[in-house]
Length: 176
Image (cartoon, rainbow, N blue to C red):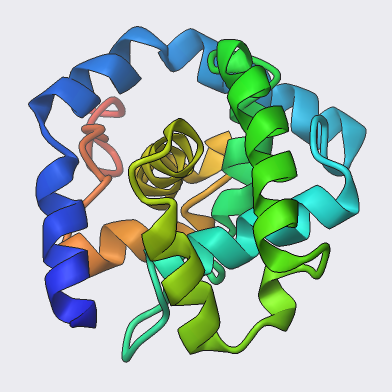
């Protein structure tokens, strides 16, 4: 089941998503710089960050390869909500309220894994879940300097080589 979710998520990251990321690149760079300057979360409270981290960990779980938790996508999502995805803040605010009502006020991460999956399956058609899922995928595969994809874990999983910058061999400019 986990492999089928990963395959689905990878296929979801289509050319449209890539085009969107390219169009929003300057905002992502600004978000990364702001987070580095602040040294922590810019939008989420620690409790909210834990909820999103738990959701992301179920959306892109850890198996024999690292998942969203290890790739630290919660930082990408936090940065997104104060920059290029600021228009999604209301979706998150409403979603946190709905999530708290469904968990009885308990943190999502405190529930058993099967209960987390059941709860998230129940809200998978909501705008909140869809937005968190989209941001999780973006955070898994964005450039690490934008908050997620810690140590390029997402790129390693799909075999992406980010050494596309040509560097002349040593001594190429020294010749007469």
